[in-house]
Length: 237
Length: 241
Image (cartoon, rainbow over all chains, first blue to last red; front, side):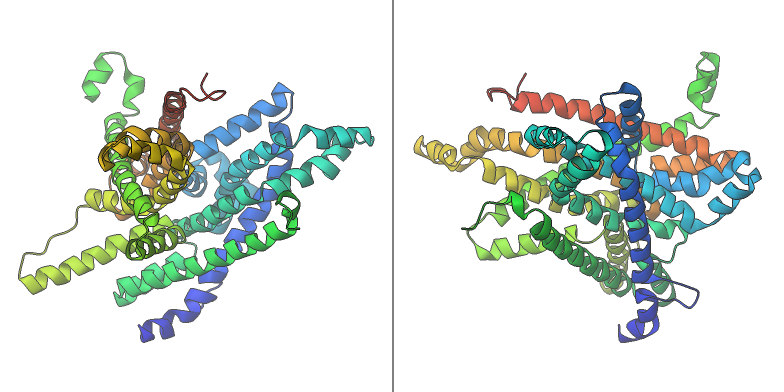
């Protein structure tokens, strides 16, 4: 056990000699996926609740497909499937993009988390009390200003609990990255297992690391809820 | 099978000859998902009763189970349990002098997924049990129902009403996690699609087919859960239409 930690400790945490690995790699994948997913999901969520059929329908179809299929299939499609197309290999830009395993993985993760996030935000937008929107209208806010100043902040605050669940699922989903040869925590654990045959210890360390990351994330969201959702909780007077 | 499909004009169904392979994979995925669901529902009910028990001896292990399992990715647990069980089994057979034998990936997949999702269902059922008004249970006791009758006739039908939305969600997550067992070597739908793709050099096509099959199953499950929700909500104003 001690030798395992001595030999694979740095790889489990940040560097395996060839580049980022372990916790650092997992966090990098996680942060990159959720930040991109978050940014894309906001306009899509607004389109999702739009009264216009041609704005709403494509987003609905996208979330339906990506929430109805396993992430593993999506990752395989991005990582092995698309590169099989001649069109992709012939185009210099696409070729370069899809040759990099990290790009493919992040692409699959972003598409997946964005689909779930869109539904969470769209649900929150639908549940904003009508009075808040009427008040904003009465103050003369319309169109994108109404969305930017009232609808989006109100919806984001209300979706913190559901969004925290999605982020924890996403953190757990990053463990799939090892199937695309990304050196995340689980890949290091597999390498350590293959080299030392200390199966329980190697995967156990990975499990504990993921557990700690999950607890930190849950703690951060507790703080976020206290900061941004206190207006919804019963008064403590 | 392929000859039959060709001769009956259903060539499209044979999917370049890999239709039967994909069908077998689909059947494997469905079997795996349903058996793990049954196991995890059972574990969920047991876990929820343990978590709500007045006995600390039952409550603490149940809380540990749900907290630990739910904070670790399912893929890590699948690999951990699958490989470790095999090693421990090897040690055991060596000590006892039995022949070496390999764990069946299917059984291992069912046990692992059932064990992992049991933790999620525990939380699901715990919340649902707490939502049933205590007066209902007290009334059942006052009518002289036995513990088993109280569970079957009073608690369960009402608990299902609160549990169903979460159950539906967890079932879909469980179904999609079955895709991961192809990593420990089970010939499920994903594995079948990958094999067909490798042979024909057309991975994308078969992966999309596999995705469509999953989409079909999730769509069907959603319909089914809608019906079940309507069934368990009869008698509640406003929800049952």
